[in-house]
Image (cartoon, rainbow, N blue to C red):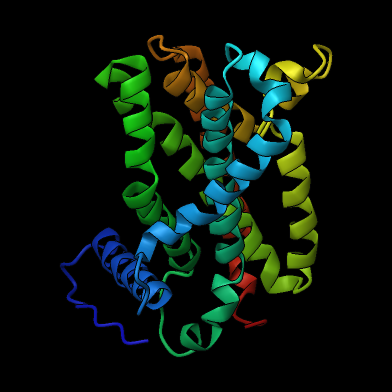
Length: 268
C-alpha cells in the first residue's frame, strides 16, 4: 500500500489522521469494487434477497403488526436487515484490520486506530451512496415530510458509533486471540435473532421487551422504522436513546482499544 502523507511539523495530528483515513477508505473501496458493474450497489443485494425470503415466509404472519400490509412488513424488514448488514459487515472487516496491517505498522509509525476506523468509514460511505437514498425516498413518500428523511441521519450516526466502538473492541481482541472470528460469527447470529430485525418488537413478551431494547441495535432499528414507516414526526425519545447507546458503546470501545494498544507491536 502506498501512503504519501506530508509530515510537516505545522500539520496537525488530526489532519494527518484524516488524510490517512481518506487514503485507506479510497483504497478499500477501489479494491473491493474494481471491475464491478454495480459497484457499491452490490451491498444492497444481501438485504434485498433476505427481505424477499422473510416476506415470503413471515409476511402474512407479521403483516397484522403493520396495518395488515405485507408491503409495510417488507419495508420494516428491509430497514432491520440493512441496519444489521451494515453492523455485521463493518465490524467483521474492522476486526482483522490491525493484524492485516501488522507488517506496515512494523515499518512505519502510524496511528493504529485508523485501520478499524477506515473499515467502518468505508462501509459508511457505501451505505450513504447505495442504501440511504433508498431509505430517504421511502421515508419521504410514506411520511410526506422531508424532515423525516433528514432525521434518518441521527439513527445512522448512532449505528456508526455502535459499529465503531464494537470494531475497536474486536480489532484489539483479535490481536491477542485469533479465533475471535468463530465466536463472533455465532454472536452475530444471536444478535440477528435477539434483535427485532425481521420481526416487530411488539411480538416480544412485555416482560422481555425492555431487555431487548437495551440492545443499541434494537433502539436504532426501532428509530429508523418509526421515522420511515409511522407517518408521524420523528420520535425524539427513540432518537436520543439510539444516540446515547451509540455514544456509550463507542466510548467503551475506544477505551478498550487504547488500554490494549501498547501491547500490539509485540504480537504483530
